[in-house]
Structure formats: structure tokens, C-alpha cells
Image 1 (tube, rainbow, N blue to C red):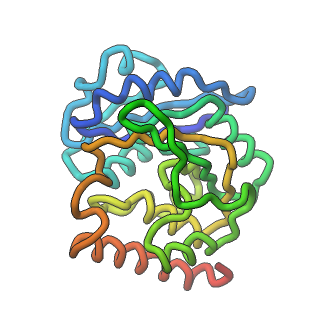
Image 2: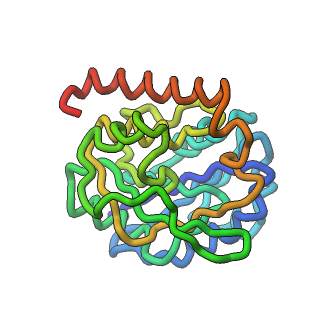
Length: 249
């Protein structure tokens, strides 16, 4: 029986032109025997017909759209259409380097108690150069429950990059998908997963994270102000409620 890893990608009009590069990086992935990928592209506030025809016509790709709800809503809508036992996030403007999906799958198969993986990131700069994501990676291997949340409580920044998450679908269902936040919904999910289950940090680079002026993190409200405080408050409240349900975290 074929096993599936589902890649979920929200996209809005400003990022549509990046989709062909993300698609090319997916097509170049070599998966372990018995596995295949499906790509759930979710157009937030637009029409699926805006996605290039060569992408829409690929049998591995499922394109849909929804009323504008923001990235958290679009991610959850994409996940709702998925069939895979693993769910991998991929933003429309990012690129998967060779071997990224295979490493996620191999960790999950080798460590049944691990609920999710993250990995090393290189920032893809506007000039095409690659720079290391600067927060400081943990050692490769097991991330014990609660470890990343403790870091986030102090810094309000995730120690690892949430745009690299690969999650067991059953755990994502228990978590309830992504929070309906205007930004930081991926960080919110990472904190949720961290207090629910052990994770794993993969030391090899698994994402080229594109830096550009139109991305959500470039918005002036992203790192301060009333909206930022409300986002951080929502993340904290959800994580702390789950800590009560998972007291060993």
C-alpha cells in the first residue's frame, strides 16, 4: 500500500509567482520506497485558476480556494483535504532542498514516539544567496516535550523554524490544526505540538526560506504593538491549557 505525505501550502496573490519554484523543488524530491507526496495548494481569497496550469494539471496536486481568512485558515483548509499520514508545511515562496522529505519520513519511521520534526534552515536572500537562520540550532536529535516552549516563553521567538514542520496527521488532528491568527500561526502550532509530544531536530538543511518585502514577517506589526501582544497572548493561553492536559511536559 502506498503511503502519503501531504504538503500543505497556503498562497495569496502576492506569492503566486513563487509557486513554480516550490513546485520544482517538490518534483525533485526522492522519497523512500512505498511513499509518495500530494500537494494541497490553498488559494486564500482568490481563485484556484490563478495557479499556473502546469501545476494544476499535475496528478499529485490538489488546488482549492477559500474566502480570505489569512494563513492559518488557509493551512487548515488545505489540511482538511489531505489524505496523508504525515503532513508537511511548505510556504508558497519557499523551496525544499534535495532530500528534505525523505529525511522527515525516515525520522518518523525510525522513532514512532516522535510526533513531529523540524530542521535546519537557510534564508534565501533576494540576491539568490543563502544565509544561515540565526537563532542558533539545538543539537540534532530528540526535542523533549516542553523544551521549545520554555525557550519561547523567555524570548517570544521560536528556537527552531516552524516553516519546516512535518507532523503526524493524527497529532495535528488532536491539536486542531492552525490557529486563526493574522500571523505567527505556525509558531502557535509549533508550541502546541511541543507541549503535546516529543519532536526531532534534523541537522541537515531542509528548507530555503525566502526573504522578501511582501512576506507576512515583513509587516510593521509583526514584532510589536497591540496585535503582536494579542498574538503572543493567544499562543501562551493555548499552550498553557495544553500543559495542564499533558502534565509531564
